[in-house]
Length: 363
Ligand SMILES: C[S@@+](CC[C@H](N)C(=O)[O-])C[C@H]1O[C@@H](n2cnc3c(N)ncnc32)[C@H](O)[C@@H]1O
Figure 1 (tube, rainbow, N blue to C red):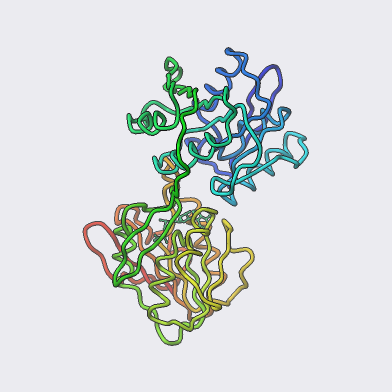
Figure 2 (cartoon, protein in one colour):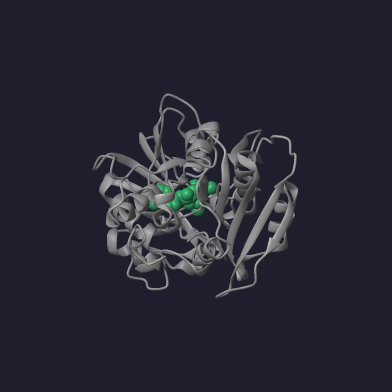
């Protein structure tokens, strides 16, 4: 998709690419941020950019040498493709939301995330590195906004104002840093027994073990001959942990597209037999090598529902499974995944089902 800003035309696409026209590489909230910067003649030198999922803002503002916060492997790939397509050098400065931000910034651009916790984590990070007269400019679609974002913003800034709506989006402008103590932004979740799971703010299911995950754990079938297991979309590592409780010596691999998820799982699952992969695909895993793949697969990305990512992962699952291996997964009933699984696997059994969730075992 093409976008013209200050007489320069850019091509920005999603990664992974999609034919679904409702899935866009940027929203009116991103355009609103650019318009606001232009109207208010805000210098974008010393800027840090958050939640720029496919690199729309970072590509367009690349000549200002910003720092981009990259929290996903797929985001890193999207940036690389879009920089290449626009003839830009691959020398963008990057950081994550959990690694300390080095240097001082005059401007932070935040596309407001769905997770209030992640907003807090990012706001705390940006605020700590902002110069005294620096400002934070947040873009959001009005339908996804709630007062809770304002409450969080007001904990970090004296002055929080909003723009008028434009194409159903708004800008939130934060100025005047408040003095705040450094916080430890890690959540703790109680699991069965005395196990407490730790996770960074913004990682899947922040307050409790997800209901689908719990339903899956109650029906997961880890057997003695499952010597090599993959937890696909591992989040905080709860499924891998449950599998290891059944078979402590098994070689287990956890893979997740989210850096915050992988780093969280490292706090929860340990052992020489445990391997972590920060990746959005299974390319680095060998063909016919796993006895069992377990997953509560991703279908929701921020405010989007997108089945395409999971379907690509399922094809890869088939490739990495040994002959006779088993793919066990949970999903919401309404997603009707069985039709898709049948296209890939000979046998798709329903292990258990209730009003909300279904657990499949595929061979
Ligand atoms: C529904 S959550 C499940 C998390 C965890 N297994 C649980 O049950 O609590 C799905 C996970 O898939 C991850 N994910 C999304 N896209 C992915 C991809 N392409 N490759 C690997 N993981 C992905 C998300 O970051 C998220 O942690």
